[in-house]
Amino acid sequence: MREVSKVACVAGLLFSGVSGVAGAQGTSSPAAPARAATTPVSAATARGASSVAVEISGTVQGQIVACPKTLKVSAAAVCLYVRNTPASLRPLVRGKLGTRAQGDWKTSGQASSLLVASAAGGAANTFVLMAPLSAQESLLVVDTAPTAAASAARPAAPAGVIKGQPYVLGRDLIGVVNVTSLGAGKFRLTRGGLDPLTVTVGQKRAQLGSGSVELPLVPASDGTNLIFPLAGLRSLGCTFTPAGSNVTVACGQASVGLRPIVF
Image (cartoon, rainbow, N blue to C red; front, side, top):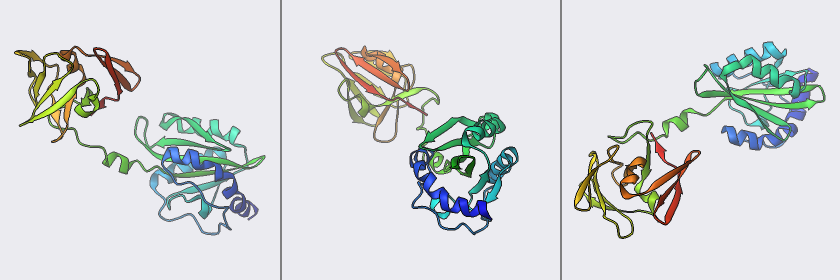
């Protein structure tokens, strides 16, 4: 078929600009221009990619073709040939997917991509890549998004931490607060010539100089590092200023920028 051979010959060239988009979405970038695409759609196609491909195909009147090997997509990928321009197709695809689409199209060169979840509010498990083949033709690629590995790599919350609350690692306070391990779950926090704060993992009550103070949350540890509640730094006379996902911690004349940990 003319459309299939055209996809095979042109797609590799047009998707050479996908490297930035694919990298941001967690996929591999393509290699050299493709040879003839003659293999059928893989039997390994995942249900998520297949479902999205069927929805998109019906909306954009696409024709399923074999994906060029040089795109280096997974065996689950589905490729669609469409007689329309990306500019016309993007709002159609975005509108069809509705709230399952994560954000808007990301572009790199002539290519664009969109992350898709299986349900509204869920994690993205599929992505759509799109690029022009000619003035009035486009290639759409639907593939699975590699989210499972990233989720599995997320560390478990240490005992005692409150989910949703910001914490800081003791080692991230270098320059404003010195943190020393005393053993047996005890840590000493000092700054300048002020009274030291001695805390115990799992206990709100802490020793400040010769007196005591109640921390807002209990400190925790991963076995090596102190995991200290951000709000607890006020006990040392420190302040913190939010700046998006980062904060600036100021203790006297010294300050440091860091990203709090939220489990």
